[in-house]
Length: 437
Image (cartoon, rainbow, N blue to C red; front, side):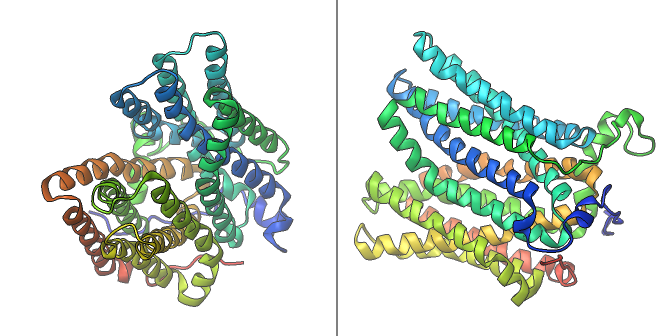
């Protein structure tokens, strides 16, 4: 096992450093175009996440199994093709891939209202749309994170990633509400047109970007250890394994994701069956708690300046791992209990948002540009691969122990993971820094 950090190379192009080296990130108009387009498309994405299953339930009388399959189909591409996507992202310029992904997603979603209008909407059609959208979303997410350092200088990456995490947070809070309103006004199929428009808007914003992007040579033109299909596909995993900082952060992120999915699964059962919460108060608690992610984006750089990068990573994970224990104190549906649950989700959101800002920035600054797509893809394959495991484990624990005991077990798993994180990475992360504006 190699414990040496992979030797660092400068990015393939230093253009962003030269073009935007001074001044605020707000003056970087190309980043603002990217950020605006992504924020709008994210709102549309959360409309779709609500609309697709509701269309299946209300218009096609889908069974619970069919609804579950529809949700699973959207995430299958993340596990099945992300590694290949990383290779494509490193072989070609990222901006054309982003534009193509947006256009493909818009076209796929437009099929739903068209089929409904023609009285031809069926579950297989919805499965196909979900699979297509999921496939091009997997491409977009890897290319997006890999493209960002082409527009933003290194000392602005923390600020840029904070804004992007803020967009996710705003979309999580506002997207479902907007989706519910649109579904009520125009119906599920035509509510999807909002997301079609949002993807087209994002594509236009990308087209307006003027910063030239460096080209990377396809693998067929490369020599050395990266040549060939398998070495190219495995490069991202190898890079993370050899870089001790990325290795410990990937392990922690994967464990956190597993526990998060177990928490959400167990909490829903516990909240409904043991606390007596209805859908309205339950959604309100989770929605208000998600505002913690917005707070996290605002505080991320302040934490970095006050605690340094290692201290910020440890403190943010402490918040994220300790917060779920507050849910154990709730005993019913009283206002105080709802406040406890909301606070738990808010602190949880602050913790994982701050952690994500610095982890993404470290991946971007420690990885050469011509490898960033594959490294990002490798991380997403490993870390997102724990989602279904965590959901299954949470359901199994609730069935074996009961919801409350299962929730306590998940809280214990969070705490144990944080202690292991401290013990295994304190020395590794101590010298780590990132440029701050």
